[in-house]
Amino acid sequence: MASDMNSRKSLADFRHDALPEAASTNSECLDRARAGDAGNLWVTADRQTGGRGRRGRTWVSERGNLYASLLLIDPAPMDRLGSLPLAVAVGVHQAVRSVLPLAAEPVEVKWPNDILIGRKKTCGILIEGEALADGRYALVIGIGINVAVKPENPLYPVTCLHEHGSAISPEELFAHLYASMAEMLAVWDRGKGVREVTARWREVACGIGEKITVNLPDRSISGHFAGIDDNGLLMLDIGGKILPIAAGDVFFRS
Image (cartoon, rainbow, N blue to C red):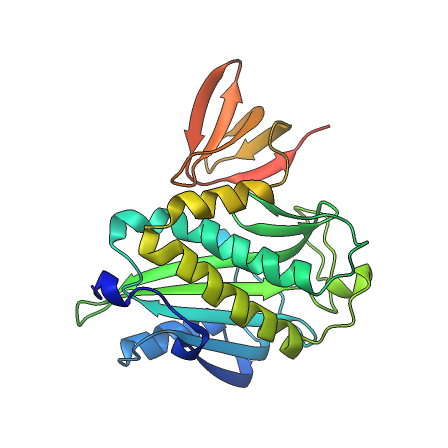
């Protein structure tokens, strides 16, 4: 693992490779990690031919939207990685909020890391990790943001930035994302800044205190969204009993 003395990152620490097309920017990053890349590498593509979302779902990736992945090598001790998705979500939220008019509908984070505008999904984040043959650990943060196009999603209502008064291009949006993610990774500081990260996440969270249903692989559970703990677990209040949840799909109930 890299020394904590060198953990704080600045814009100058990151590189960017823009591709016209990729099967998947996440896969491209993992391939480069296996080939020895040192990390802190952004890969973007105008379109993806094999984009994927969480739980193996297809991520439709036509031109007009932003498809970006960030490769990190040994980003933190393994026991601190659980809070990284929160930092990523806050960084993406910051980038999206910065390119929308002030009068736009609320921009919120739906646990764990979907970005919503007016309760409609505009961004998905897929984080994948792999232990490399040389002993390093590669972690890839994949980010897909609907800029001009909103592929239909049978699970959630969807939207795109252009529907909310933004004329931003994917390239311009990436410049904002590049800066906001560098800032949030510095705040996260290899997991040592978890309290600041969780505080920022709670400020932009969607639906704390509301009734929700969480779909797990084997069942669905309903209760009130009581917030998150300092490790990013969802706290579901079921009749006064708090159940921590590490992964699931959240649906808001009226």
